[in-house]
Image 1 (tube, rainbow, N blue to C red):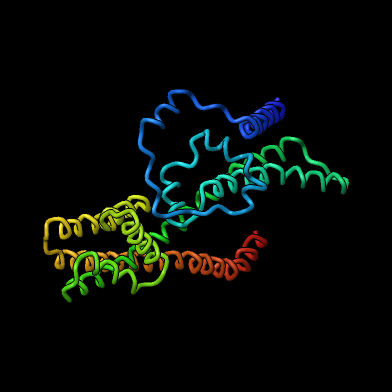
Image 2: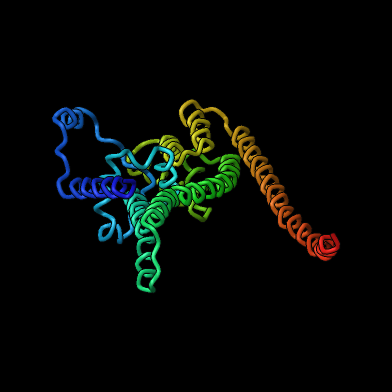
Length: 297
C-alpha cells in the first residue's frame, strides 16, 4: 500500500510539473490590471546571472517551483549576495531531488543484475530521504556562502568608511568622496558599491539612495545606516566625519569580536577529536586487563 501511494504521489507531482511547464496558466484579469495601474518595479542594483544548463536540463521544473512560492525572501536575498540566479537555484534543487530519488533504484537494478535483490520499501524510503536531502542541500549551501559574503562585505565596508572619512577631511564633497573611495578599493564588495554609484549617475538620483537600496537588497543593515548618515550631509549639510569614523570603529570592533568567537569555536571543536583519541587510547590500554579478568571468572 505504501509503495503504491508513493508512486501515485510522485507520478501526480511529475505530471503537474510537466503541465505547468508546457501549458502555463493564463494570468487573471485583475492581475493584469494591477500591473498596468502600478509603476514598474525598480531594476535591482545587483544582477544575478543564470547558468546555461538551466535552459537545457532544469527549465521544466522552474515554473512549478515558482508557483509554490519558492524561493523564500531570505533565500532570495542570499542569492543576490552571492550572484546566483533564482532559476539556477530552483533547477539545481529539482535536479538533485530527482537524482536522489532515482539513485536507490539504480542501485537496486545493479544488485538485481548481480543476483541480489532488496525489498521495494528499502529503495523507496531511501529515495525519499535522498530526494529531501538533495532538495535542501542548495539552500544550505546558499546560506553558508551568503553569510561568508556578508562578512566579507562588512570588512570591505569598514575600509570604505575610512576612505570616505579621509576624503571628506581633505575637503572633498560627499559625492566626490564616495566616488573616490569606491574607485580605490578592489573586490566583490567594492564592485557592488561602484555599481550602485554608477546607477545613481545614470538614473540621476542621489548616491545615498542607491546605497540604501543596495543595503536592502543585500540585507546588510550597516550599509543602509551608512546611507542614512550620508544623506544628512548631502541634504542638510550636517558634518558626518565623526559619525563615519565611529561607524568604522564599530565595524572593526565587531570584526575582532567575530574573529575571536570563531577562534574559540574552532578551539572547542578541536577538543572533541582529542578527547575521542584519549578515550580510545585508554580503551587499548585497559582491554588486555579486562580480558584477563573476564577469562579468570
